[in-house]
Length: 326
Image (cartoon, rainbow, N blue to C red):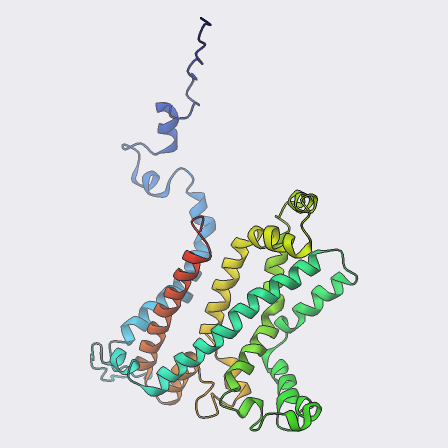
């Protein structure tokens, strides 16, 4: 019978699971309070403190104050002025779910997301994969796709109005085939046109995200796929798409959050949500109610409902698109 060999146990305080190693990983119970609270490297808190202050001041505090405002009939006043702000409980939230204008705005942004998010994911991934390959003028094309993203919205909107206004270039080319009413004053086409505009303007940013993700896809996988007889389309579906899955989840989340905060485009392209509210967004309604009409408490309630809905959509996207690893 062959002799059995046993592997000797690893000795020394550096071995995983060794009591001395565990003690070094965690502060001792008798350590000072600041050591137990800040850990072994308190200098890390010093480096992260500026960003922590930024998050609290720019995001956390306004969100908490918006929640507070949503329970009151709030009114902005000069500093030191005594203004009655009665507590109204859930009345603002009840009004949100019964106001036809607000409900229409949520329906409009849903139409926007259904068009914008899939187009953004598909086009940015395809263009990024094409730019990542050995094509001529690759640097020029990368810059060209990114230019609309960094250009001021007002300037880009001017170009879009020149193209799609009633006597614009597109209608002149189409002639009798042009829609009547025209693109941006048509209640059926206004929001889809805004979705296409935002997709075109922000495509360069998402292309850069995918280009960065494509650098992490091993080239050996494409070689193996080619050896097995896979063509370009099959390699794209079997290697590229799974390889950039984390980036796809990120693009889904960012495009959803950006679409939910839609404001500038309908405000400039359709004159503030026209025609007849067909392109109104929840953030635009918040601006109208909170700033123009002086109902910030009601506007805050709309914003909180929007935040909750976006978080729910983001959770579902992360759950079904991100998989277990996310």
